[in-house]
Structures are given as structure tokens and as C-alpha cells.
Length: 72
Image 1 (cartoon, rainbow, N blue to C red):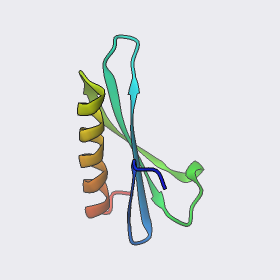
Image 2 (image 1 turned 120 degrees about the vertical axis):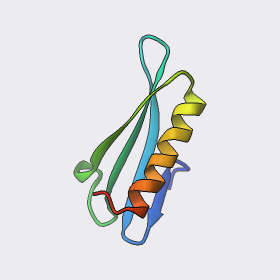
Image 3 (image 1 turned 90 degrees about the vertical axis):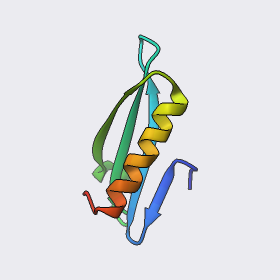
Image 4 (image 1 turned 90 degrees about the horizontal axis):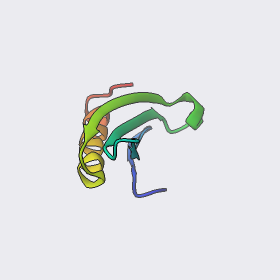
């Protein structure tokens, strides 16, 4: 698995940061049951950050919360 994937029991949270045209970064989280295909992921918007590192940190934090609180 990628280093941008967290798993807790039967749930997976994948996170990433996408660069925007204005040079900011959008943090994103996608959650699903591990037995489901990626097509079944639920998108959780995290926010816009000035740097990729901040966006990835924010996305990871949000992914951890989604797993902890069973947000699916």
C-alpha cells in the first residue's frame, strides 16, 4: 500500500494533496471499506493550504479522524 493510505480494521482512508492553478494545494481524503473497490470511495474535502506539506499533514489528520470516528 502507498504511504498515503491508512487502514483501521476493515476501513481504508486514502489521502492526497492536489496542486491548484493558483499554486495552493487542496487536501483530500477518500474512505471506503477495504473489501470495496476504489470506485466506492467517499470523498471528504479537507481544505486549501499554502504548501503541499501542510496540505498532506491536514489530509492525514483528517483521514485519521475519519477512521477513528467511523465517518463513511
